[in-house]
Image 1 (cartoon, rainbow, N blue to C red):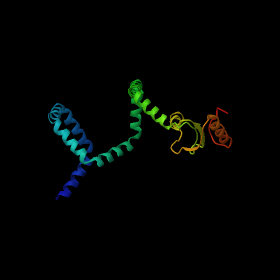
Image 2: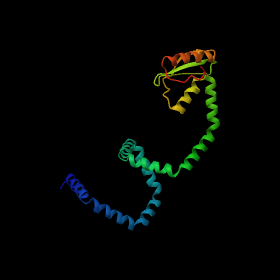
Image 3: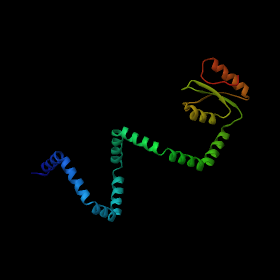
Image 4: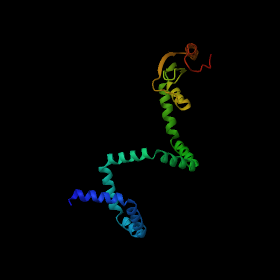
Length: 189
C-alpha cells in the first residue's frame, strides 16, 4: 500500500468507528484526568505560545470557522445570550449605569461643546426625506440626536430648507409645509 491508500483506509476506519473511537478517547481522558491536568499546567507557557502562533498564522481560517459556527448555531447562541441577559438583568443595568456615570461628564462636555458650536443664532427648518418629515430647531445637531434616540428616525440625509432670525417665522414656514402634506408636529401655530 502507498501513502495515499493508507490515508484513505485510515479515514474510512475513523468514519466507520467514529462512536467507538470517541468513547475510547472519553474513557481514556477520564482515567487520566489528573495526568492531563498536570501536563497542561507544566506545559502551559509552551501551549499558549503555540496557540498564539497558530492564531497569528491562521486568522482568516479561524474567522471563517467562527463565522460558520455562528451561522450554524444562531438560535442556540441567541437563546444562550437571552438566558444570560435574563439571569443578569440587574448586574447589566448596574454596569451600564456605572459606565454612564463614569463617562457622564465627558459625554456632557463633548455634546454641549459640539451643540454650542452648531448654534448659529438662527432657527433652522429642516427636512428628513426618508421620513418625509419637516421640523424646526435652533440646534440641528441636538434635534437630530433627539430624533435618533426618541423615535429612531433616519437622519443621515437631513436637508436644511431655510434659516430664520425668529422662531415665529420658522414656525410659520414649518406650518405651511405641514399644510402641504409633510409629516411633523407644529405646536407653536
